[in-house]
Image 1 (spheres, rainbow, N blue to C red):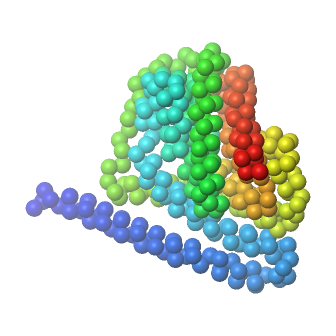
Image 2: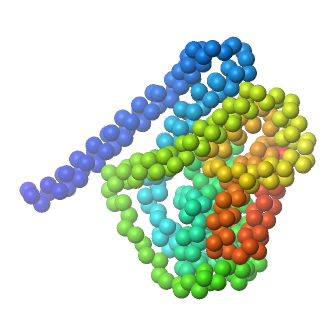
Image 3: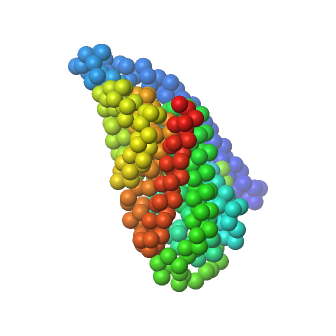
Length: 350
């Protein structure tokens, strides 16, 4: 009897964890479907004219703030469970020994499920190089991980539809694969900082997985605490910017600046996105507002990609492991890919 007690305890813990999770998800949906009524009631209490621009901006902000935060929490929780199968060490081991081409595809795909932020770029980069991962394959992962991650895809799907999310996935991964392959073909290993080149290759260590259902659910909750806790302020700022665009920027003005006919708008928004420090969750409410005002899809996606993949803070962090020349090549190749996406989609959806 005593030998079976631990198993019974583990099974009971798993049952309680799953039951509590299902109850929480049911409550999430019950609250989510009432958000529109809640936001309308809150705006009705405000001392603003119902048809004014202020009321439009307030409705956007009051509705989108809980909506985006709730969607973010759900998506991060689900993908936190998925990520319990991965770790930086396991990711490094999966990519070690991969040849270019197949390796670029594998790296970009792994980047979708292992969304390490720019602050993780240096240790990941050094770890990949030390494990023998080719430079181009490493770049495919570093482009894909922040840009084409589960937060971006989940929020895009929920806020602007599956077509835009699918477009972003396909072309974001294409940029990661092609740009990584191009950088690999240039053979720029000599442009790494000397201390990185001198790192001795070692065997990748596989860390133990979360082995139980309760552990995986706990990993999801920990991801929510970690990620949402870090980005909630940026999300609110992004929603505030989106509310101003939604309420105060005339549709005709925005369409003239970011419309399909303005050929210069794509490089302009790519340059504009570089100094902006944000993440996928923070920039997507702005994207939602831009699209609702008539901004061209290609221009809007180019802006989003540049903010996430070409941000100045990330370039500063990568400078620790790359020479200025290599950082410039990286930024130039990725910018060219983003420009191609912007122009292509503006042509296809004109």
